[in-house]
Length: 377
Image (cartoon, rainbow, N blue to C red):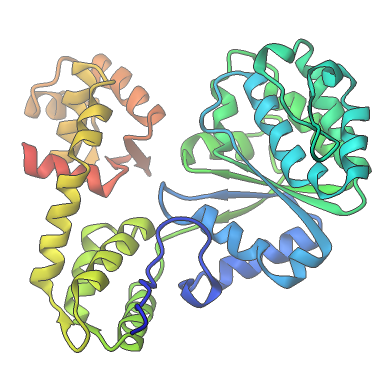
């Protein structure tokens, strides 16, 4: 008997047949890149930015004509770490395609030539570079861009969590990257980020180097009815069913955030036998189980913020949507320390992406954290 694969994928690349909607966003991204435009791609966390990029990059029209490079810089904290991650990605995605490209990479990156390793079996160099090997970071960055300029195919480069560069101790990273990128004629970039406030400041403030340098694409939640139709189809194809109210409960509970909805659908699919229907009670229990599963993560996340920041986070959660958080009325209602303390705490919570602010209304960024707090408090 053939095992039925779970079609609700939550990690890795999603095959086109299991990819839900995003037709307009995918078309806009593909059109921008094939027309040699840079793109700034933003959304709240876990909305599916990486999956969208993978979906577009997996199209035959892109795979045939372009070399695609993805570098995640969320873990980086300095400019040298950025260069190491960028260099690794370029080597893995470009230089490994042929001996000629490897040789060209080693030749052009003169500042790191003494640091390359060697694979005796393949008779080829390896990118065995450590952070300490990057002694002249600006020069090394220029060499990587020079290499991209000389590659025989046009490159599409995704820098994931691009707002991370604003946290580096070096002060000129934005301007330096912008200078190199605007001179590059053989590549286009997707600047992807989940810290929306920071990304908007970087690309839409006239005082910043990347001002108006990229086409903006923003991911919002997938339409609920479209997602319901998608989920119902996948259940039905496996001889199962899901009650519309059950799906809507999962969608609404997690504010339509793609990863969370997809995760609950994955669990629901596994829980529902062939010939049966997943109901609201099953979804409610799966949500409770998921909250339990993430308990230690939520506790750890809050362990890194101060008491004043926690107090404000709890106050905003209690309100759902909080306004005038520095007013005496708000501070007195939630027994906060002072308006000035609240203002300082809010800036930090925004920086950590624990809260979001839209049109002067504050709310929690993560529906899972909100659910966890509702249970604990």
